[in-house]
Length: 439
Image 1 (cartoon, rainbow, N blue to C red):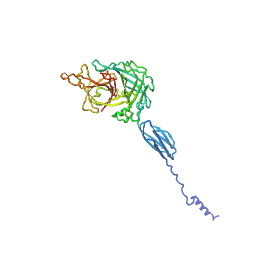
Image 2: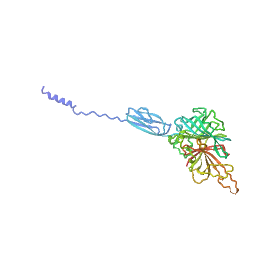
Image 3: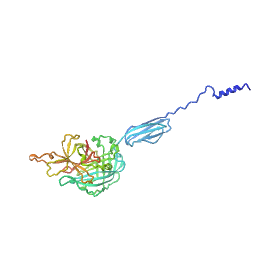
Image 4: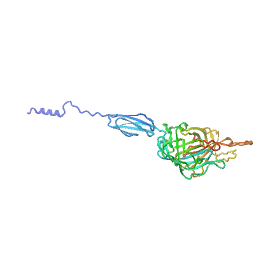
């Protein structure tokens, strides 16, 4: 018994040490997650779709963030409608590993650029029937968005109507207001339809990237207005006697949509009458309520003038006219005969784009009938050379005028809109849109 004891002890010691030649267990190999994420395009226009494609390895789940959100699988594809302009980011995170795609989205020209919700617009409407004085009306209209390509009228009313007629001295003047308060014109169909629509000529061109000195670019911003009424107050000699069917220049909110100053301006023509329409977002007018335009706002500024010709169903056609500087000095006309033209400011006429080398003279007169009137307009006319020549030696000189136009300042006072004033002083009863822009 005593001889076996050492052997047993040795065996126990060896067993407790794990035996000879053993090693430690191997550490686990780390799992590496990889993510692939791509887009079908990185430059698109608002309203277009892109396809996002992704795959992953060793991921348990994936999630979306940024300008998209969905519960995504570890691989797949998804079509995304890009609804906002600017820089859009799309991030995919799979088991803690993230990949981001940036897509640059340009703006498009559609109805969404004009208003966000139902909005009141204000402006002027002029109607002139051959053989009768024209009528200038202050108007308000509520517009709503129908779809990407269309707005429509929810209401249309006027609050001031004045005849533009000759005074006893053969000068043009605005008569008394005969509106009898606010009159709402009954729209034939209150919702969007073929007789009540502002049809935007939608385009993928970015309206905030256009060249404002390019007439071709400006012509792209246009629409057609169709608006029928059940009846109108008065008759075709008072304000207008027909429904509105008009091609207009349509300018969306400026400053990349941050400013509420959308506007529409256009004309229409029939065989014996013409109309002019101007509408601007009423918030732009309210913002200038304490800074209304005055006559002196025009003084000593070089304006480039443009004519825009409109035909329903077609884009406007804009042309360069001349340049003008309105001076504070009163015009000193001669050889007027029986005419008594007073109160005109002398204005120099220049070749387009120039402020040097006068090639003639305009007369510009400010018409503002009363302090409470919303109608603040200017009558511009071209004076012929005999209006300034001395009649020496019994010469028979006669001062005459042509190119009569009505213009008025935008609420911001920076530019002017207006129209050709046909049908007065033996001029043809036709019209066009007038646009003055500082040079």
